[in-house]
Amino acid sequence: MKITRRRKEKLIKNIFFLFAIVSLLILFLIVLFLFREGIPIFKEVTLWDFLFGNEWYPTYQPPSYGIWPLIVGSLIVTFFSSLIAVPIGVMSAVYISEIAPAALKEVLKSVIELLAGLPSVVLGFFGMVVLAPWLQETFDLPTGLNIVNASLILALMAVPTISSISEDALYAVPKEFKEASYALGATKYETIVRVIVPSAFSGIMTSVILGMARAIGETMVVLMVAGGAAAIPESLFDSVRPMPASIAAEMGEAPFRSGHYHALFATGIVLFFMTLIFNLVADYVSHKFREEGSGTL
Amino acid sequence: MEKDSIIETNRVHFYYGKFRALTDISMRFQKHRITALIGPSGCGKSTLLRLLNRMNDLIPEARVEGEVVFEDRDIYGPDVDPVEIRKKIGMVFQKPNPFPKSIFNNITFGPKLSGVAAKADLRNLVEESLRQAVLWDEVKDILDRSAMALSGGQQQRLCIARALAMKPDVLLMDEPTSALDPISTAKIEELVEELKKKYTIIIVTHNMQQAARISDMTGFFYLGRLVEYELTEKIFTNPSVKQTEDYITGRFG
Ligand SMILES: Nc1ncnc2c1ncn2[C@@H]1O[C@H](COP(=O)(O)OP(=O)(O)OP(=O)(O)O)[C@@H](O)[C@H]1O
Ligand SMILES: [Mg+2]
Image (tube, rainbow over the protein chains, first blue to last red):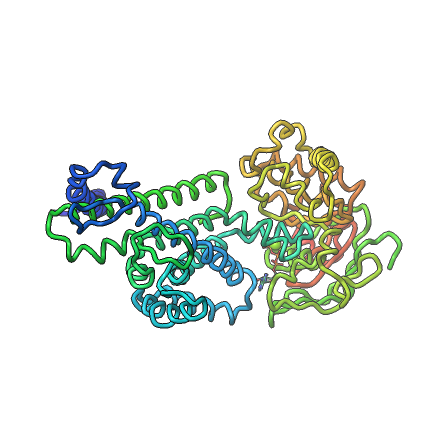
C-alpha cells in the first residue's frame, strides 16, 4: 500500500501522541502507587496530627507519626540554601552573560557546568569530611552535621540550576532593548539593572523556584550532612532530618505495609505536593510575565 | 567649525575588525535641517549613523579613524564620555523597540537617569513628548498600559517620543518607517518635518520618495564612500555623478 503524505503525517502525529501518553501514564501510575501506599496511615493517625505532630517515633511502642519536625527540617534547609544560592546564582549569571570578558565567560560557564555535574554523593562527602569538622572546630559544636552545613552544600547544588537558567533568560533579552537603553544615555550598569534584569525577570524567578525545588527534593546531601535529628531545631547549628533523608534512611528497615512504611509513603506525598507547588509557581510566574510581553525564556 | 553646521565628520574611516566599512567620510550636518542618507544595502549608512552617537562602541573590534566634531570637540577624544554624547544625540531604530514597560515608564526612562525626579516634571515631560510625537491623543488614557500592546506605528512614535524626552540636539533615525504601513509612515514623515524646527535630524532611508519629500540635504553612499552630498533638490533633479543618478532612478541597488 502506498503511503500518502497525509497518512504519513497522521502516523507521525500519532506516534508523538503515544509517547506523550506513555509518559503521562507512567507519572499517573507513580502518583497512584504513592497514594495507595501512603493513605492507609490515616487509619492510625489524623491528617492534622500527621502533618503537625511534633514527634516522629515510628518504631516506638506505641509509635507516633508526627512529621512536623521533618517538614520544618526540609523548609529550613531549603530557605537557608536559597538565601545563599539565589544571590550567588543570579549575580554569576549576570556577570557571565553581561560583564565578563569572552575568555573568562567560557571558563566560568564550564566551572558551573562541572558543579552541576558533580554527583550529590560527592558533595555530601565533602560536607561530611571537610565542612563538618571545620564547622565543629571553629564554632565549638557537638556536631558539624547541621543546618548550616546542609544549607551550604545544598546551595552549592542549587547555584548551577539558578545560574544556568537565569543566564538563558538574560541571553534571551533582545539586543534591541539594550540598544534602546544605551541610546538614551544609560550606562552599562544602568542598562543591566533597569532593562536587562527586569526583562529577564520571569526567567530569573523560574530559575530561583526550580533551584529551590531542587534543594527541597535533594536526598543524598541531607542524608549525609544534615545530622538526622527529628526534632524542631532551636539554632542554626542544630541537626535536622529533612523529609527525603527520613524516607531514604528508614525505608529499608520499615516492615512491608507496616504503619511506619505507610507513614514514609505519606511523607513522600507531602514532598510531592511541595515540589508540585514549586513547579506550579514557577510556571505561573513565567507565564504571567510573558503575557506582559517581556523578553524572557 | 562652519557656522550653521552641528556635526562634522573629518576624514573618517571606520573598521569592523579588519573590514573597512567606511572610507574617508567628510560631511557637515546642518542645524535644523533634515539630512537623508541613501544608498544600496550594506553601503555603510547605519554604520555612519551609529558612529555619530558612539553606538558603535558597543561592537567589539570596531575602530574609528579621523574625527567627529560635535560642539567644537572630537567626540572620539580621550576625555569624552559616550554616555553624555548619547544624551545629546538621540536615536530611533529601524525596528520599533519600546521597553516591556508601561508607556509612561518608557518615556521617563531616560530623563529619570539624567536626574529628573519630580512627579509633576515627569508627567509634563511625558505629555509634551507624546504631543510632539503626535501620539498623545491615542494613548493619554492608557499611559500605564504596556507599550508592547501598541501597534507598530504607535510603538515607533513612542520610540520617537522617548528620544525627544531627552531633549536632544540631534535625532538620528535609521529607517524609522521601514516596518510600518503607509498611514503610519505618512504620520511619521509629517512628524519629522515638524520636528526640524527644534531639532537636527539625520535619517537613513531606502525610500527615495521619502528622502525627496522630507529632506533638505541628501548624501548618497556606495561601498562605504560618500559619492555625492548635495541639496536634496539638486540630487533628485540633476545629480552630478552618474552613479547617483543610476541609483535614484532605480537602475541599480
Ligand atoms: N557588527 C558588524 N560586524 C561586522 N561587519 C558589520 C557589522 N555591521 C555591519 N557590518 C558590515 O558593514 C557594512 C555596512 O553595514 P551597514 O549596516 O552600515 O549598511 P547599511 O548601509 O545600513 O545597509 P542596510 O541598508 O541594509 O541597512 C556591511 O558590509 C556590513 O556587512
Ligand atoms: Mg542599515
